Image 1 (tube, rainbow, N blue to C red):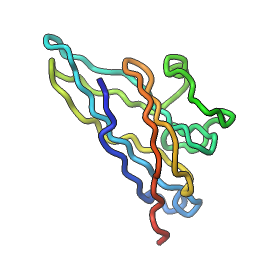
Image 2: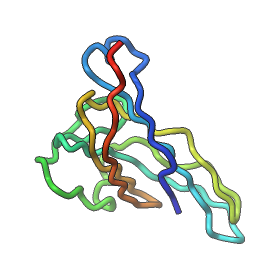
Image 3: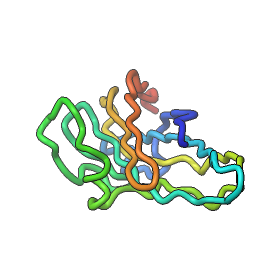
Image 4: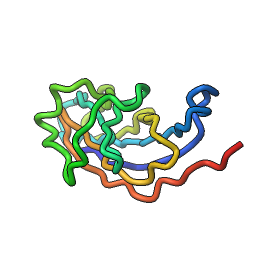
Length: 136
C-alpha cells in the first residue's frame, strides 16, 4: 500500500531553472507492507500530469503532451514510459517506511495536477492549490 503523505513547493536551487519560471514540487510517499510474513520492495514509476496538458517526469520539464485530456491514462499502460523512479527499498513484514521525496520541476503558475504511480503499486492523487513561492 502507498499513501501520499506530503506535498511541498519551493524554488529550485538551480538559478537558471528558477529564472526561467519553474518551481519545484516535492511529493512524499509512504509505503506499507501488509504481508505479515515476508519483506517486500515495491518497483514503481511516477509522473505528474499538470492541468496545463503537460506530463512532468522529474528533473526534465515538459517531456510530453497528453492533449489536455480530462483524465490521465491507465497506470498499467504508463509503465512502458520513462517515469520518475518512485519505488521503495525493502520493507520488513508488517512495516511501513517513507521514501525520499519525489521532486518535479513545473511552471511557476501551475496550480493543479494529478500524481500518477504505476508498477507494483498504482495510484492517482489529485493535487490542487499548489502555491507559488514568492519572487525573490
